[in-house]
Length: 231
Image (tube, rainbow, N blue to C red):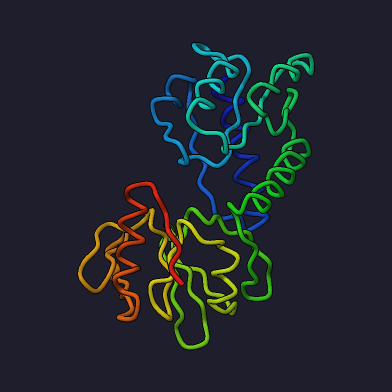
């Protein structure tokens, strides 16, 4: 089981590297261990073995679906006969063992398309290459000279897309335009001060004077679970 898991992680990480996808892979040994770490919105894609040592992959998926309807689920199985069981948990795909790089690439490509459709990832041109960026991993965005810089959980990405165009791709909540040159991911705000946000990692992002009250209110509504729009 450990060897299969390690091989699966290697295939996923290889695909992520080859396609410049900004994401992190976290392995779990059991369904219970995954559920202990699981939080709604905390995972974008899960690969679940049908046969796990405690809870089965299907039972784990059923628990996940009680609180998260958006996370993509892909089952690893020994036979296609189990695919019908996945309709109840809205599975996005299946891989029949033995897992191969080709099968993994096909499923990852399909999931990549679903991410783009759901707005969980955005395509950007960086240094002449097209890359896919996980929106959830963006801490904040700023314009510096003629570059738009995405401050990520791991490093920075610099692109020439305008902030207005990027704001449109991010499609609003939980992203908030708080300044002419800044957009913050409210999920990564550590604290709110009078004139600025303190972001994960310690950076300070200023709040524009115009509409400052509305911006602060938007963040307060976000914390309460009721987002509002700020123009």
